[in-house]
Length: 222
Image (cartoon, rainbow, N blue to C red; front, side):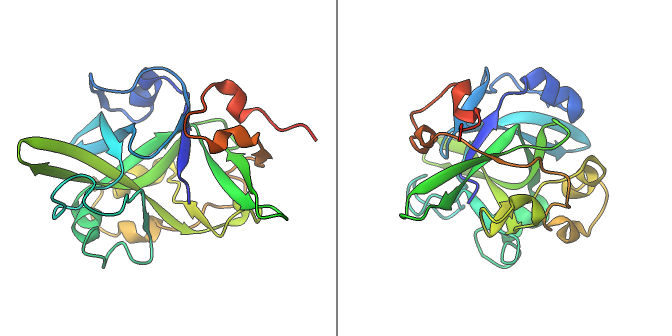
């Protein structure tokens, strides 16, 4: 789940929001259909400095011989992230935040069709999705990659899906980024009621990873 994002807030605004130093390799412009394998702007904290930097969406485990040596890993489940070999070191030492303006989720229709819904925060602020990241390097090729963490769906999913991304509140950012000691596991929980706006159906053209443009998030007329 949570396999498509929108990022319409400017990089400068995201850097200011997270008090992060902005990298020079960030994707530019509003993006209304961010797909796996594409670059994301990711917040990390290392040595007391937060950085907003580009990473590939699609976690590459250290043992992969090539970036496509195994399944494309875009999400990590909160209930197994601490024990799965691909993730357990990352969730201890390489946690990050993935800013997003919103995300799409799909619901099965009465005829088996995929019906897309769009989710945003009720307050209009960017979402801070919990993530883990990995540095992979082999044969002269180096990639920093990221996966978002998911948990059981809360009330804001409105029955659309049984899982949702972990969305962090500002007071929780230091703990998730490793700046405030240990105990970040408690943050991997469903979003509280009222944090997410009521979702709306959007046109099925977003089902294509080639689709783009602000019309993708327009509410579908009845």
